[in-house]
Length: 295
Ligand SMILES: Cc1cc2nc3c(=O)[nH]c(=O)nc-3n(C[C@H](O)[C@H](O)[C@H](O)COP(=O)(O)OP(=O)(O)OC[C@H]3O[C@@H](n4cnc5c(N)ncnc54)[C@H](O)[C@@H]3O)c2cc1C
View 1 (spheres, rainbow, N blue to C red):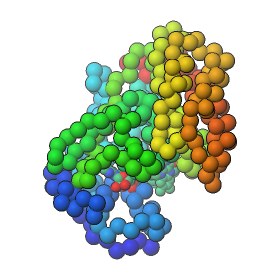
View 2 (view 1 turned 135 degrees about the vertical axis):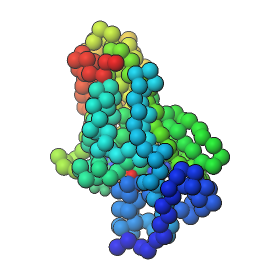
View 3 (view 1 turned 90 degrees about the vertical axis):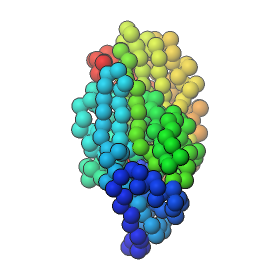
View 4 (view 1 turned 120 degrees about the horizontal axis):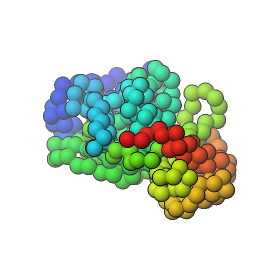
């Protein structure tokens, strides 16, 4: 059962920010509600005042230009992104992420902004956004600021969002020539489930064999989504043979900070990383070779 709550439905961003500045933490932001309402329904959270932001036009829409890249409104649903050819063609790791969030019903309702602001390490868009070097536009009555995605998370369920501040947009730079990306979601069962682990690789290779540039991120492998910087350093300049990819998996497994939980032990998670990191490098490289995500 849901507890009783008051609902605010501002019609413009200005109205929303003014109300949110006054109310601060007394008020819970509601986008698609697939996290907030589920938590309330399960009795895990009690909110007496919700602000539904679904009417804010300023948080809607997706724009792509080859020069500037992608700008995604925070209210964009996973389903909308999944169905946009530009996402699949230019940002395939993000396509891999959004298309694996829950079921179609969840993806029709859940927003990318909600996935980010919910700030759990298993969020399926987080690894792709980190590996694709996303930036976030945040706004409050005090002004607008842009921050790199990797500076957004402070811990599980903790972000740098200040009181009265909303996530407005997600920016992703244009894909460079001879580059591509992939996200692997590892779950315990072949059914709707959260990522037990995830790996994202965004790679550039002029000859389709050597790694010229790379970003690697790991999902559910630490308290927040993390970049695997030692793995990246190891890969740059190397020919991506099976042996190299296997070694990269071992480095990623060693630099990850997974914990044991009821879902799996730390040791098991480290073993899985050794398998999914090479698999994800291979998938991204294969896409470079096939020309997916060429501008
Ligand atoms: C059945 C089911 C299956 C699911 N499976 C998956 C899965 O496989 N993978 C996965 O990653 N997630 C999954 N989820 C979780 C959820 O669907 C996603 O996290 C979704 O993207 C949340 O978006 P939302 O718009 O519904 O967020 P909401 O529930 O509306 O909000 C989530 C959080 O973000 C805050 N928030 C939302 N928008 C903003 C904003 N613009 N500015 C500031 N704060 C904001 C809210 O206050 C809240 O704290 C699942 C959920 C369900 C119910």
